[in-house]
Image: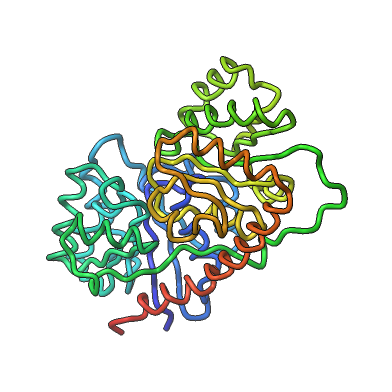
Length: 362
């Protein structure tokens, strides 16, 4: 009999947590595990690529049609759903975790885990963190850290000992993300950031830094891959700085690899991070990194080895290090190091570690 696992998340959109859920679903051993997906919201908020994949592979998605705010109906719906599915493990993500605490207890779910995708103090609002703190200490829910830095913040935020916090670093398909040698080298220096347009990612700082880069490197280009609530604000800043010809907003895309393969340097100006999958993918494609020292970034990039790290909010340092990497020889050296580093974060190893937890207590 297969081990039944429920993956539960607010929506299946285009963020990093959603990507992780779908990667687990994609790479898990389906001969041993039977996976179901639960989305708190409606079908319309699920990315088409995920709906298609689940449909093609007979993986059910249950939509709970949550209302805005705290929706108590979710508790009743989840109890009914868990009694129907009879899962051995319930794995929650983001604020879906707060809704699973009571249903997990009511249905006596053997394995209860919650992956924390960001530094703990930023993952959830204060009231939600109080609920999860109780869950970690009293309900048998295990928090999963995605990087050593994130694990430290979990220990501090929730007063938990290290042994109570499994560390399972995010992973990517390193076989899929491999850089092909360019037939014709571009005369431009191309920087790329793959991130949703949200306050956390601080695109405003990145664009300000790029304006300084552009004053020194006439042929510089910046590709911003993603979408989000701040897109109009970002467009306005680009126009105000007269960078319309040099900053390219691609919108959301399912083919990030195409953009990574044509660019030279991965850049990120985040105020806080967990362990960014987009950065790992860029590193696997031999791109050196220039980034702020945000959360788990420092776990995957060593300053001067795979790229350069700057203090959070330091626009001048970000620009200066971006300019340094106009040197192609230096880019290739750091890019090769980045590839070696990324190879340590293979998706298959990550999924096997989750599988061990899913099958525990059987």
